[in-house]
Amino acid sequence: MKKLFAFIAVIGMLNIGASFNVVAQDETAEATVDTTQVDTTATEEVAQETATPPAFEDEAIESTSFHQVVKKQFIQGGAMFMSFVLLTLILGLALSIERIIYLNLSSTNTKKLIASLEDALNNGGVDAAKEVCRNTRGPIASIFYQGLDRIDEGIEVVEKSVVSYGSVQMGLLEKGLSWIGLMIGLAPMLGFMGTVIGMIDAFDSIQSMGTISPAAVAGGIKVALITTVSGLIVAMILQVFYNYCTAKIDSIVNNMEDSSITLIDILVKYNLKK
Image (cartoon, rainbow, N blue to C red; front, side, top):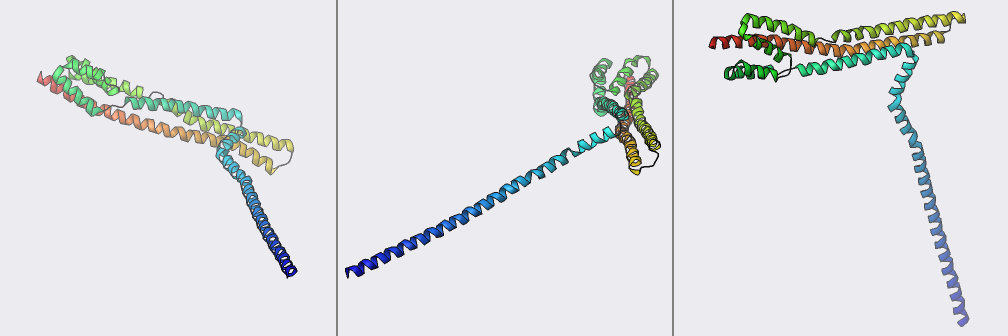
């Protein structure tokens, strides 16, 4: 019986050991599978990460493509004529910005100025009204000052002074517009000149080759037309600023004329009160 129990115990121990080995093998296999899955997932993530930079590179290329295209077209158009076209753009923009700043500073709240002038004229006299005009910026205040300065000479003299000084102020407002107009006309003319010279060079290359090459002709014509396009773009940009300046000048001149009539009426009433 002891031998039987010992044999059964040995068989049981062997079965338990075998079961532990199977469980250990299963856990090892599962761990291997998990590790393989993790490695596969990591590999896919790395592949995705390595595949991502080209997208960013494409975005970077797209973000800088406009600058590159402009630079390429500028070089292809010819440095000499494209430089002249660029110079007209720079000068035209500088003149336009200067005029815009000057015109905006010349704008005046005419209703407030007339009310202040009339109040000062009734309460403090001509000297107080002159002080109001002296402390106000703009051509309308300058015209009012010139009219008040000659009030003792009569209304007719005041009216003539206002009209004459209004013409002077209008000339100051329009100062520089002729140069902007010159840049508007000069930019496309320089572009056309570059195109004509480029076409001459293209036909010279055809003559030297002795045969007509469509690629050479198309390339030469393309390069020649770049200057024309550039000149037209510059002219369109400057034309917008030019029209803005002329519209602003017309508005200021209308206010000057209207305010001058109001000033004459105020001075007539003031002389009647005296």
